[in-house]
Length: 260
Image (cartoon, rainbow, N blue to C red; front, side, top):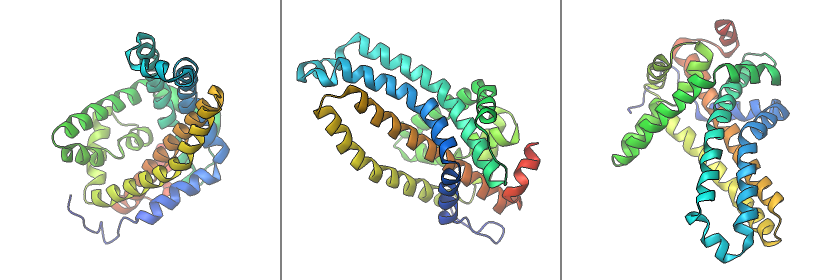
């Protein structure tokens, strides 16, 4: 993963992160709406059910949670629903980020339609990437990290360029070549920021559990999950835009013309 300037220019970590958060800030209600509906809802349902049946029912109920068939059944159902809604969210927010950076105004219905139209390919990409990275982590972690970086922009490449699933993986590998250490640092900074933000959230969740409020406990957890999903998708799309500009000289304002 040797680093080098790309075409005389350098991948700017600060620019990538600030671009992602500027996009979220400029479309806050849109991004939050999509994230809460698509990422937050499944987590809220699971969190509320878990809090009502186990977490807030005493130590004995909490300790029996992992041996309960109903818990694993509910967890599996939520996971399946999250795969579908997560696929829609990734495609939708990726398009929203690129549209905003291209000077366009993304619309809720338009983004939802894009996400729904790409459900199956997005699920396939998520499963292939997930399995690959997991196998890599099983091989002493480092191969998993490398694959994670190689495929860092597979979703934006597929959504924006309308190419095949396997072509999107190859495209991501080509775009990230020469910039992977900086992509790693970008992701690391964002993950640290999210971890820092999660500290007060954990205290808030503990407070909600202490007063026995299952609804608020689940709501805080769902909102946190939605926030993390929203930020990560925006950052990935911002990385993609940066790499296209550095490697191919395509300004963000030109990306929409290519998509059309």
